[in-house]
Figure 1 (tube, rainbow, N blue to C red):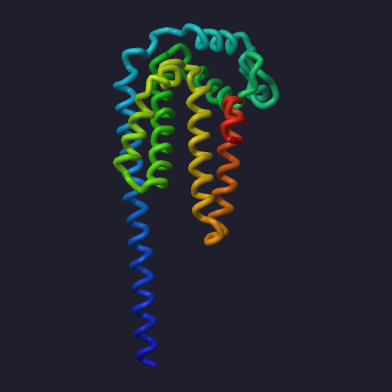
Figure 2: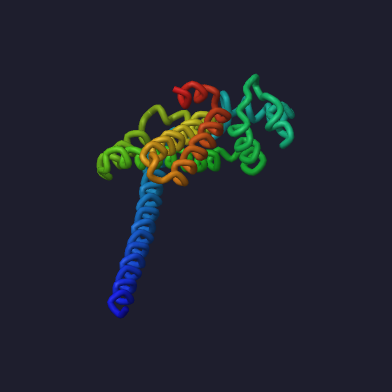
Length: 219
């Protein structure tokens, strides 16, 4: 009887140690990911700050004028049931609706938001690469390349560049969820369901940020 009790205590202690170790690793992983996100944000700001506009022009000016002319879905009810500029992108339109209302003509504020979104996309891409190759150095460098690519110029420096960066962000989240869904396989049915539904959610948001992701995410 005593031996059985002692064995049960040892098993319980091992289980508690395993849970504690798992929680500790999860905290370290979260802190590390946030550190990477902050690093990318700084790198992106340094990379693109010299191109940050001081006034609205092009697409920014066009959408700003549409908003104040009650044609950029300036009413919340219009965001989900009407098009703007012959496009239906309610995720992008919702964010722009909030930003124009809050920031007005402050181009610096839009720039900061764009830096954050682009940094988030680069971080998700780095996490996906790490899950594929399990090499943080390679993953981090890939994220830096994505963060500093000249292809991000429009996304970061234009207020309406979010039409590109939001779609990219949700598309990378879709790919990460699909990867985790495949990894979970049949070993963990609950996790597999969670990743499946999260992939569908991210894909839906990508579709409605920019219509091109209807093709990318489907492929």
